[in-house]
View 1 (cartoon, rainbow, N blue to C red):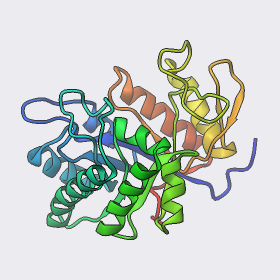
View 2 (view 1 turned 180 degrees about the vertical axis):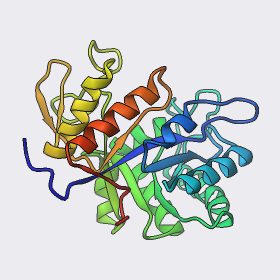
View 3 (view 1 turned 90 degrees about the vertical axis):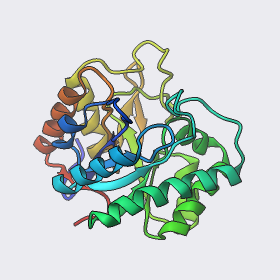
Length: 259
């Protein structure tokens, strides 16, 4: 195994994705394990009240705060692609960044990063105008805003080309294809069901830059931040096992940009 000396990795989770009387995910349970959170900004989920509460909780826990802008598709939870222009996306993202920034500033915190949600995240992986629109919105808000994007994605390349800091994201509970893309959820073995297996992959990602296909073949990835999904029945168990395994391996858990 490669040395993990001085190796740091972030653990992030999507956060504050309820709205009105509805709650979603396991925010309170996950907050004790993560180092950064991606807060829904009102389009795919979230509302002013959940945003304010989520910001307050994140600051109290010492987690870095990021915006999680999505497509305006509450019914589909932002997971359905929409026929939108780059101009649409720029406006959508800047609007949501501004909304969350207001709550962060009012609470005395700092908006640290941006991670697109759902379909918007995947569209930005392959559509250059969409990726550029997201990056331009981030630049308009704060040229130090860190862009979270999937390892090897067009969004990360675009952020780097525009001079924005970025963090390469991987998924401990997902298997990968040989080209570095996520294996389709419909494929057998694409979603890891065992917490210890996910923890082992997280350590391999952080220490060696290696993920695995459903068949067990190694795949090269860059792991600056590991996403912990909060919508599974055993999300807190997975999070605790992953954090424990990383710490045991001597890996520092730290949000990007923090020392």
